[in-house]
Length: 268
Image (cartoon, rainbow, N blue to C red; front, side, top):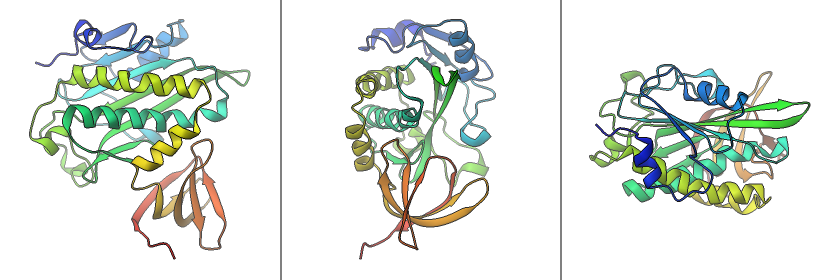
């Protein structure tokens, strides 16, 4: 079995901070929950929780996250960014770039990025990212970022098979989870340091470049008290999805759900 052994992961890490230390579990409910408790108890930035099996993984907006024991990758990081709260929405996007780069390097696939936190291969979702921030008196105490990647599962549940896939299904080959995990951290750390240095715009520009969904896509946006439609126009300064409405103005979408993604439209 391709166990996520801390010693094997550490032997492949080039990072100075991320993935240090590693807390490994054979089974737990949620890596985010354990990381949250460790952070509350004072765990340093870079602490990682990784599990062979996650029984109650969750995604954005309270959705559940499927993973198979010993086949997929579920892990969470403790981050303590010295950054304004308004900038934290960018971190999931930046992490998505790193995951995409790592997947491409390890598997040869060319992932696509879909706002706000999805990574797709050949149009099907294989990775999700969930960020949970803890604040005190309006200041950021810490941030937990959880990543779930469908790696070596051969068959996904029927109810999600039209929209989800795995790296194995797309390549026909098993991929080392420990190697992929180490590569994600190696890719993410320089991006994270750039974020801390306020070099955010080049990273958001890179996200737009790597995403076929960022510009000229017809979308339907659903928020708590309303819904509207428009055409994507890239990202705002804090990672909001820019949507140009039919009336001509552009809205920044920071919260809400894109309930429908259409095909690319031709600019007039």
